[in-house]
Image (cartoon, rainbow, N blue to C red; front, side, top):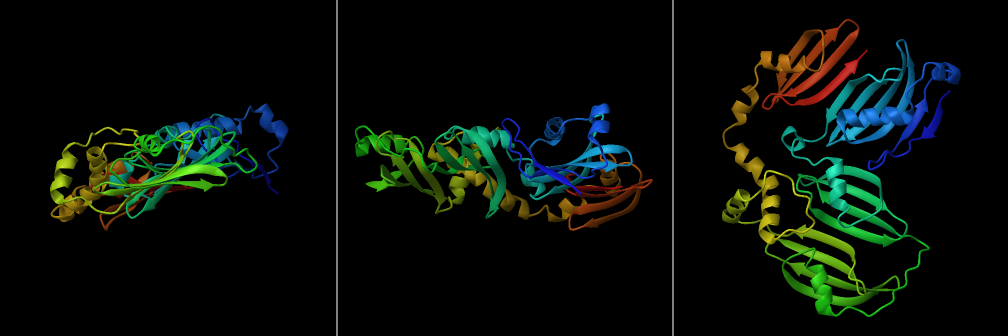
Length: 354
């Protein structure tokens, strides 16, 4: 029989899922006597180890004693961790990446993405997910405060806000008071978030509120913006690319890209173009010659040396498959399976079975 209870969220991080006491024979009295770690302490240790947020945590009774089994998501990688409930020792049982190795190193952390979202949205983060769309990676972030619910999509590499939506919670007062902004005043607010030529501006009503609906366009992107017609507050924002830049503009823009992430909501046209170009052009530059070199970049011995940083014991099997070293190791009763990118030496996946 299992006892289930909800996980409370850590400050500034999202935790969703469930917690279970998997074996009722681990009695409350014995756990208290041995001064077990609390759920909160185990979660904090997991996040300190790999970053990201806890999706599930479970207390299991094993031969060695009580262990917290924790699942964590961080920068496109899913981790399964074992945390000794008595001494806090953390070990990685399994690691699986869902993004290419060359992308994973460029991704913002969840904390950085949340900081970008909070430039427009306030409140507590209730959900965050890393999504991919047409080879572009985004953090989808939901926030809540006393009056509003926010849905923000943040570019996972540049920190740029791609979409933003602000909604009143049901039952809240939705009335406005004050003078309606002029079109010129509304456009001044809109241009804090977008650049380009204005294609449309209309005053409308939504859910009893007066709203300016604005469409803008530059040489690469289209913007749709809804503003509170009295306060100028941003209600919705959407940015879509309709045209790819020319090769000449791409080369010029790429030169101006900063190596460091900048968590900016709206950028001048040249910098925004540069940031978008960087993620799309890189694969094209890599296709011409390095394909053969990529698979032979890491020798078998080098791959084994990297594997032994993460696992102990002897290598029982090693094979190069489609640019990835697949390695199996054994240490007594413990078996390891690892995948290592043959070009970069990055650990792609890790699994430990006891």
